[in-house]
Amino acid sequence: MKCVIPLVLLALVTLAETLVAPFPGVVGTRSGRMELANNIEFGFVSYRSKRSVGSWGPECTANGGREATISKPIIVWDVMSTLVYDPFFVDVPKFLGMENVNELYKVKDGDAWLSFERGECTEEELLDHFFLDRREWDGKGMVEMLNTEYRWLPGMEAMVRSLSEQGYEQHVLSNYPVWWKNIEEKLCISRYVKWSFVSCQEGVRKPDSRIYDIVQERLGVPPSSLILVDDSASNVKAALGNGWKGFVFEGSERLCADFGECGVQVDAE
Picture 1 (spheres, rainbow, N blue to C red):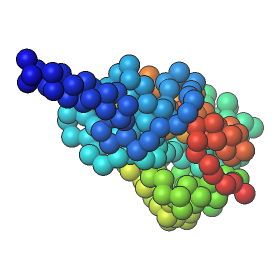
Picture 2 (cartoon, rainbow, N blue to C red):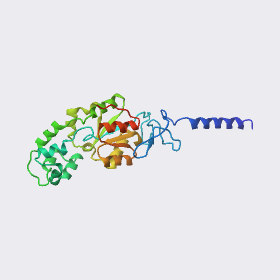
Picture 3 (cartoon, rainbow, N blue to C red):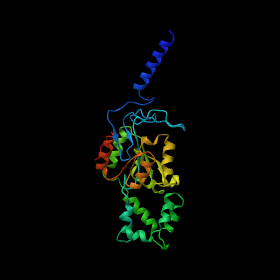
Picture 4 (cartoon, one colour):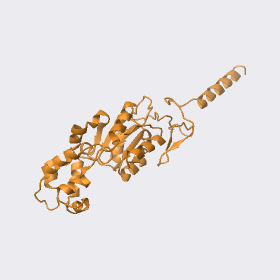
């Protein structure tokens, strides 16, 4: 009986220490809660689930997730109409002598473009099949025009630079063909954001759920540590369905406010 009492006391002390300590690897907790549009809570520790996280992690998985603490969210960027001006909607119709992009949609071969974005055909094949009627046209001239029009959207270079300087990990997740290399050559986006996931290299486009799985598996992080910024609501919705956070891009000023709501402070000119 004398041996049983100390053992019971030791067990009670151990239990108490477990209840007040954070989960292994959790950096710390914040008072209160923050919620995003998908109602996934973060920034605090919940003892209702062993997979809940504080300060963004970690939430390492059995298939080889990162062992180190994820102290900051990972920002995943769409490129066209999010970081970079997309000439397709205004400049391409103008180059072709059309009034607007709706006129272009009526005569363009949409399947050819999707194949090009998935890396299933070459630039030459895309230009040959760009129009449904297979007309002769100055495809090379359009490509040259696109290259002249690529530019940072207002405030976005300053924003990704600010995030980079603060140590945030940033990756591209873009539906785009091999022309992404032309964008990189002109704007040097890789100074701040890695061209990690481009549809022409992965063979999959957003919002296919497989591309989100590819990102998670290759980065080795839990979905709750990822934030997608994309101008397409359907792409963001798919990310939320995979357990990510996400914002529909509506300009740098609005994005600063969105980031601020989840504790990410950025500067944008």
